[in-house]
Amino acid sequence: MIQQLETSKQIVEEAEQKYKRECKGRSLALTRNVYRLVNTDVFYVESESSNNTYYFVKFKCGVLEWCTCPDNSMRTGGGQMRCKHLHAIEFAIRLGTLRDIDRLPTEAKVRKVVVIPSIPTVSTKSYTNDDYSF
Ligand SMILES: [Zn+2]
Image (cartoon, rainbow, N blue to C red; front, top):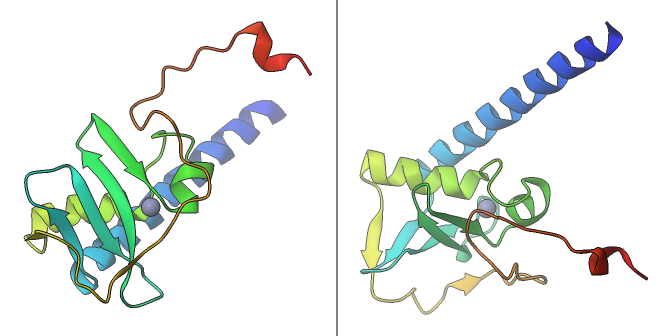
């Protein structure tokens, strides 16, 4: 019984998190720059907190969803839950605020990631025993 309650609480929290990310994504799409490199799946989403700082994002709806922000690379576990930048791109496309560019403005800085995931697609990881030996 207790376990069931815990589970439904978790589901509610996840739904809330998702909703918050969608809202943030929408406001990013409306208030910050969202760029797409022409003829690619590469996007740059301006940071919510610092001007001229961009997150490097690869996005192809349902196929490729990868962002350099810590939120996406750590907490959402590879596409399980989208970060606000991925939502921002989707909203920018829908709301028509997306801009195609050849390259970023010269004053723009791109956030670097420390750990780069090797496969930026939907993960089909398979672990071997070697992963657990020390
Ligand atoms: Zn992100």
